[in-house]
Length: 254
Image (cartoon, rainbow, N blue to C red; front, side):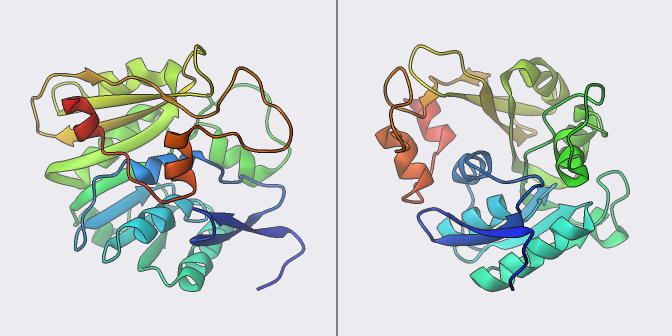
């Protein structure tokens, strides 16, 4: 396919190729880090809530062949791109076009080994983005608590929910999982000695293990950005370029 309003972008050093809107919401590193942290095994099932053009699911499928992946996406344009991207990458990703709060009957009847999500980061109030698709992807129409409730309902007992979000929303995330899942949190810091602006939260449904806060993953080397290179740390480059996994459970064990 070729469209003037789209770009064809590479992830995982070209292991995943995805078409996405030139001016709309664009996947960057967040879905790659999200996918890397999911402890999935071949033969398991994965549901991505709000899959956009499918980058997180496609990166996970590239790392773990043999997964049964389903993506839920409310925006028709993004759902269509996700289906095209799945076909182009030869990935077993089924994309369901529906709202988080109005799931189709067959999806409500299923339980998955893993549910993953990159929920909208910003509150409903505030200035709108110029592009409607970007605004829908970034602005929180559905409360974060509903994302958590839906994820828990769609996860089998003992299964994992993995989300990436802003650090400032961590209290809400932990409150949503309290009493229903045990949580491990991995902060993501742009540079050493900087506050972590994003976090990955992994919850295991029904588990009662103690809460674990891991040491931050530092993404870029140095104190400032120099030149045109990415200057990733070795740990970040292994995830973003080499398709490495980030096993939060192993990190928790030290």
